[in-house]
Amino acid sequence: MNAHGTAVLDLNADLGEGFGRWRLTDDDALLTVVTSANVACGFHAGDPSTMRQVCERAAGRGVRIGAQVSYRDLAGFGRRAMDVPPDELADEITYQVGALRVFARAAGADVAYVKPHGALYNRTVTDAEQAAAVVAGVVRAGGALPVLGLPGSRLHEAAAEAGLPVVGEAFADRAYTAAGTLVPRRTPGAVVLDPDAVVARSVRMAREAAVTALTGEEVPVRARSLCLHGDTPGAADLARRVRAALEAAGVRLEAFA
Picture 1 (cartoon, rainbow, N blue to C red):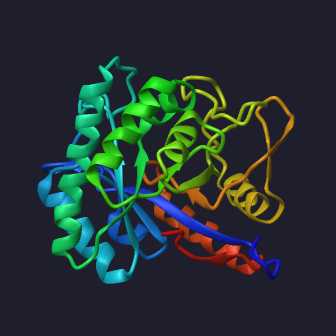
Picture 2: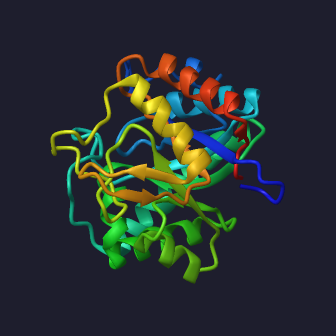
């Protein structure tokens, strides 16, 4: 809520998640809905041409460009647990942010924030060492970039200690634990598949700052941004429904960066 009691929310989605001739997301359709684009930087998905194209299209629509950094895991789409030495991980984060920044600036924009992907996102919720490595890589990339992630995570703690802005994120299509973390994807019910439920959860998160955990508890949600996954069937249509429902509920959609 802002000072006038109006709910303000950013909508973000993962874009550029293809490689060569393979395309996973309908980037053009999602760019008409979201206010921020998490662009794959080549480590879990994405390639130079895809990164350039998404940056150009996002810039043309006024959508903020974020670096979606990940473990080096193309084969596993960045969703496999990996043990990467902190110094190496920090270097890989700097590399990914720097690569995307070149394309963003060539498109007349810039990288506006950083968000980890997949296994790295989940790992940095609880792993202080890996979280610190991610933050070190972001700091080295320059620009005091905001870090988008789960509220209360080790990642946010490390970012705040380093003087970086932190932005809380929520997921309408992912189940939550009673502790406010995401239910692991391999757990039955971890992904919310009912479109009506996703829409209803989105509005409740924005208006009431709450969600019901998979086990039934009420969980507070402190989020400035809502993630809409683009790699599920009918993702673009669902994203349009979510946006329309939020606007109908009086939620102002506005990028955080």
